[in-house]
Structure formats: C-alpha cells, structure tokens
Image (cartoon, rainbow over all chains, first blue to last red; front, side, top):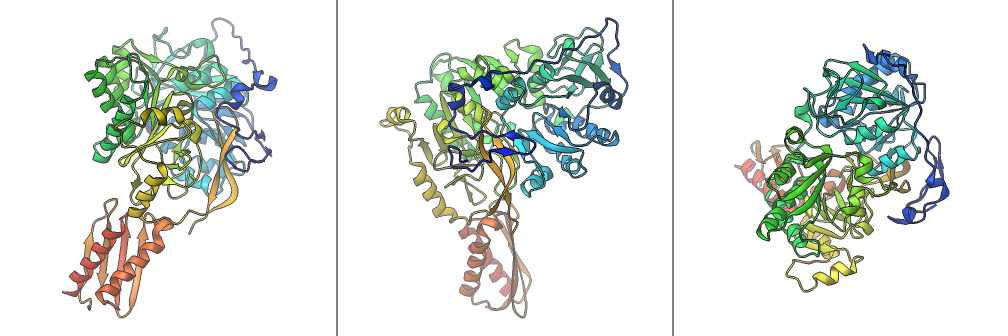
Length: 519
Length: 86
C-alpha cells in the first residue's frame, strides 16, 4: 500500500508485524481507534524489605533479570559520544550465549558503530533507534539487516514504550550518580551527563531495570531523577563514559559567516511573525546555523524588551547562557548537549529536567512541545515540497538521527528549517529527499543564505509577510539559482530493498531507508 | 603545451581540490572526489576540457576533490598544467 507521500509500505513485515501507512501529521491523533487506546500495564515486582539490590557484575545483574533469547534490551544515549556502557554490555551478552535480541536504545552514536558485528554474530536481530552513525549506518544502508531497522523520533519512542508497541524486557541505565537502592541522577559524578530524560521513560516501563554506575554514593541520593522503586538491581563498574565527549561540533555556536547570514535571515522572519511577543517559547536544534538563530533572536528580544516564556530541547551551553541572562524565564531539558550544561542544573532552579514523554510524546494528554511557538531545525536536504531528511547523508548512508525533528516541527506554531543552499558543491534543495523524516506539511519556512522560502501550504503566513521587507523567494527558484552555481547532480541510485523503516511520531510509516548502489 | 615536470596546485580543504600533474607518454586521468556519485562525470568532462584548452595530449593527472565548484576545478587544473610545463 502507498502512504500519503506515495511511498510503498509493506502491510506486514516479519518481526515487526502490521505496518500502518502515514496518512498526515495529525490524522491518527484526530482519529484514535480503540486499538490505539490500549496500553500494556507495567510488570509488577515486589521485594522483601532488607533485600540487597547490589550485584557485583553486569553478568550477574543480567542473570537476575531473567533475560531470554529474543528479548528487548534498552539503553540511553545521554553520554553520547563518550558512552562506554552499551559496548561493554554487548560482549557480555554474547559470552552468556544470548541470541536474537532486540536492541532498543534511545539512539546510537559514534561509539556504538560496532553493534553491526553483533548483528552478524546473531546476538542482535533487530535494532530500533533514533540515530545511526559510522560503520553501523553503512552496514544498514548496504542492506546488512535481515529485519529492517526502525528509526523513531524521541516522542515516537516514548509513545511506542507507553502503548506497549515495544516492551522493554531489560533496561540498562548508565547512572552517573546512584545509591545502593537505585536512586539515580545524571548531574554528579565523573560521568555526569545532565538530563536523563530518555532513560526516565525506560525506567518507568521496563520489566527489569539494571542501574550501572561508576559512582555509588551514600543512600539516600538527592536530587532523584529515577527513583529506587523503579530500579531492580545496581551494579558498580569502573567507568561509564567520558563526559568530555558528550558535546559534538554541532552543539557549539558556529563561526562560519554563511551560518550567521542564514541565522540573521531566520531571526528576521521570527521578528516579523505574530509569535514574536512577550512570553514567546523557542527551541533551536543542533547544528551551526540553528543555534546561531538563538543569538540573533536574543539580540532582537533584548532590543525590544521582550522576555521569552521558555526554551526547550536538547540543551547546549549557549542556551544556558540565555537563561542566565534572563532572555528566557525557564528551560526544559530532555537531553544535555555538553558538559557545561550539567553545572547549570546545580545553579539554576529554572533549568528543569523533563522526560521524553513530557517532551514530545504525541499520545499523552499534552507534551510540552504542544506549547512551543517557534522551532528552528537543521536539514541534510529539503525538497520542493519542504520534506526534510536528517538521516541519510549525501553518499546515501544512514549517518544521522531523527531526534526531536519531526516532533517539534509538527507541534511548533512556526517551524523554520535552516541550511546553506549547498555544502561542498552538493545542493541542499532537491526534487525529493532520499528519506523523509519530517513531512513538508509540518514545515513553514526554509531559510538559507539566499533568502526565505515560505511553504505555500501555509497561506496565512505567506499572506502576512507579503508586504514585509524580508528577502522572500520561491523554493523552486532558490533550487534553480543554486544549481546554476553547482551544476545539476546525478542522482544516487538505490535498490528496492527496504533496509529501514522511518516511523513517524504517531506510529505510522512515513518512509523507508533504501539500499544504496555502490558505484 | 608539454608537461616537463611534476607539479601541483590546490588544497585538500572542503570545497577545494588538489591537482597533481606528472610527465607521461599518454593521457592518464585519475579522479577521487567526495561527490563522485553526483559529479564524477562532470568533473571528468571539465578536466578534459581544460587539458584540451591547454593543448596537453599526454600527462598523468590526479585530482583529489573535496566538493569544489566547476570554476575552481578549471583554475586549479590550468595552473597545475602551467606549473608542470615550466
């Protein structure tokens, strides 16, 4: 069957069951069926008072969990590029003889590329993730998985867990600070990573929770992000990760002048919109130009004496700075992008840790992104229908992440995508993106160094800006201008094999990852 | 134009290219590019045009491209050829 974006979606896939085609950003939410309303209860556990939770190795903790072949295991990616835990656990599971596991992390970053070897060995059969990087992304795009990878947004993952679409048998939670009863936070200790927003959902719904820490503190720990009543066992190891590697280049303020020109254009668009007013809420995604928008926007806000209501997201040090300066009153943090953000939790009570359900789940009584006015997001590619790809790179490999991109695009009142018109000769505006993560119907504008393209589908916005002095341009003209400079690229070639499924936040399938033809 | 010496021009920075030329008995072109899938053919065409413009019939020319625009490729190739002919 074909979905709304004309992508052929199989009705059923072995291991993944029935697949629903994407019908529109809010169709499933508007028309919840009885089937959608069912949730699976959390497994009841009971322990006698005085029972010790401490286990002296990961192996013993796994034995205690009762994990079976084919079971689902989860991890969080809050330590990002500094994470040691996942690749420490995989060889242990292999040695213990586990087969056909479903790997269900909140995302996979560079240190986790080696997971493909465990797929080859049969230890892992399925992967559900937000991101794919390095060798693992290449392995997937070359058709290495027997069962396609499922790529989800952060909100979509919270929904999948909460509704029981995916049950977590064992959650491994890297705990930067943990006491003997399993109270956990992410803000103290040698591997402090800040918010534990994704791990909090796993701890709430998993059948068995293993806290793994390199910082066992005296009971009782405070503050508590994950409480002891959700944690079944606690294991002490040497080192959870290297927190200096939490931050990647994409979370620093850019020094590239083109990024700043793009950011100035985007900030002017916000200034000219109806959302630029007292109490406005704002999110900036990772990526050079998106974060720079926060800088120019804050200049306009200071000049016009406007205070923002809240800022939200993956939080970088630059956003912490804006909170400190009083540009925004409050900051919601589901994931901290660099080590500098961790200190802010200790210093600023307006810096609030939230979980992924609170952040972006479309199937609850209202995630906080429903209250978001403006979001600025990056793109690998955007097409003339404003569909955005942030997963598959210019070589045709899955080397990115869905993240909160489609969640925030759908919910924010003004969704702006920013990118240069070309990077190293490759035009960023294409006829059709190789993989749709965020549907064009949820994107209001594309801003580049050449100007501002408003999505004609948002007639109200297009009309309201007609008489402004903004550098408005049709996205098709921007594409033509760019190709005059770069030349028209030959298209990448893909086969029909489905290597991955892009699940939209509501659980429907919006696109697939195709197998790249190597030339 | 006759290529008498080894010469090079350009850099390995993003959006630039490095061109190496060497005397040879025949025409041999080698192209490596970060955008080979999209622009491999176009780069080859441009290099051949520049060789023809310079009247170079036999040379070993190696391109290491990191996404340079067409005018950049022409400038780097023609300069490398000039340097090699001296």
